[in-house]
Amino acid sequence: GRQRLPTAPSARSDSVAALAARVERQQEDLKQLARHVNAEFTMARKAVLTPMWKERALQDIAQGELRSVCAEEVTKGFRKLAAVFEEQKVEAAMQRLSEAGPMPWETKVREDFAAAMDRLDSRCEELRLRADEGDAARAML
Image 1 (spheres, rainbow, N blue to C red):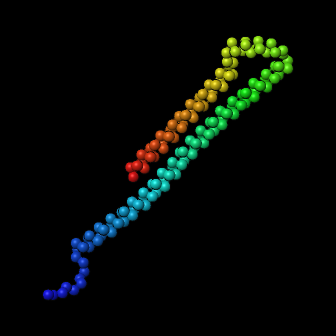
Image 2: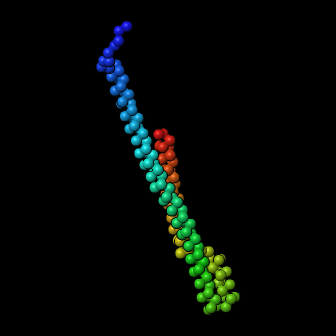
Image 3: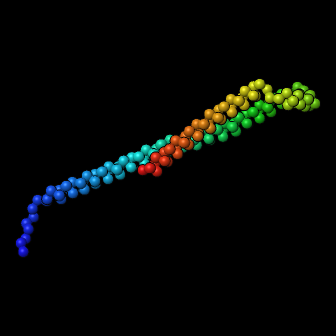
């Protein structure tokens, strides 16, 4: 038979080759986009989780320090009172204080602390929700 000499590719093979090249470019673009989104997600997650961890640690530290400072101040006060009063008078004063209930400054400190804890809790919840949204966005990729 007759041999065919190599000729220019047909119009159909040209369009298939062009389409294949286009698909390959799009796949590469998608891979680059996925890497970028993944990197952004990782950075966002670190940005969200790090403050949450730090806030919890600071909260624990603050509560511990507040307790120790309060205990120290009460101890100092009792030492001063003990030097001035007899033990029976101190016991009677303590009984009157416990019957009177919390002092106004103590109530104010407790309210301020509770409000600060509420703000911290809402901030932590907001950050947790943002992290969950990031997880959901990442899952969609």
